[in-house]
Length: 314
Image (cartoon, rainbow, N blue to C red):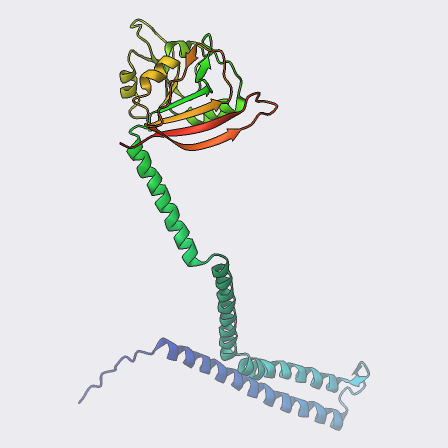
């Protein structure tokens, strides 16, 4: 005797879905036919029953015989079932749903394409790329220049008159609020190198800055500050700061001039009686990179200009 082996047939998921859909449609149609047959038989039964025996003929609803109302109600149920089986399933079935989805997706894709076109017109991709590349190159160039010009970028910052006057009796001879704000903005977070007299002119330590005091007095102590005895020691001390500032006075400026890479000078366009002076800036060594004029106003009695110098490359 030969034994027959049953082979397992693998059904494709799409075929299975089609099969299930067809099976459900057959069941719906079968129920529709059953309902139709019951409707026809039941209607004929009620009509014959009423004609032959006058079964409860006196019972009426809204002026109509009861069996008419039953037939109408039954017809209503039949029409609902008919619409569900034929109309909704045939004209609004899976294929109709798929077509609507495809139409909606196509419409959305068209809208997205229009939006993308508008964005491209407003912000061209090539132009954005060029701007981005230009910005990166500019910033990279600035970083390279800073790295070349500073290690660290030792900066002298001062305010001086047209005759290089700095002050008298260890104090300033002018009051420029905007210049004070600029000094604070530039020096905050950095080391500030100064002479003993400049340090002692402060009513208190300047916040968020490391004070380095240069003095020849080996026994000098300054609370809250670091004391060194040469400008070279001060330069070595601040080498980890990317931009330490030398803030005065006149003798310290003169000693630090050969080490400085940048000068932030506020040039006040008047001459003053003074006993301390900023050293002359040799334009063979220094190059003016930036200037910004500030006129007289209600808070500033003197006109002045912010000048930024960089040491020329050798």
